Length: 183
Image 1 (tube, helix red, strand yellow):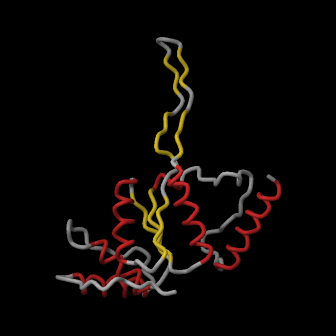
Image 2 (cartoon, one colour):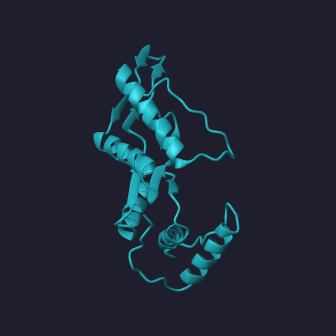
Image 3 (cartoon, one colour):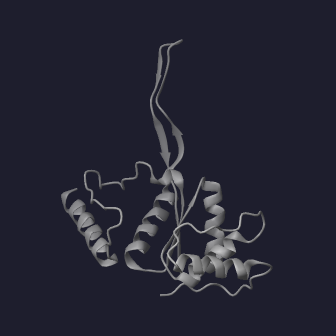
């Protein structure tokens, strides 16, 4: 399925910015300059790029709050497509600590949010089953991520190598099947 952008008209210099960014990306530039002004419609401009280029897309935010805002906006721009939210599992994290003054050791503690887990599983499912996927993620979600039950399994990906969606989907299915049968 193609990305279907909700009908909203571009204003001001947005049409020109969209055209320039599309041309730049189609010419192979990996990091084109995007508009950097506040309230200039950057999210709308990015939504237009996603729709025009029609590629699976990853949007990384520096925190969960902005990720949630972007997720909501992209969900409104693409109501028929798979817009997913992929952030860190933990609502609360207390690292281990030692307080020498009282000789007290504080154990590491974390609280996993079940809704975030559901959203992460939905993201994974969309990535292996469809092409019209836009994932909004927080930077912190990429550190130490191993889904429950998949510890000890890994596939190596090499920079610059081409991987087909079907091959990745098949590998993921194999990992999941092996984990289910060995658990």
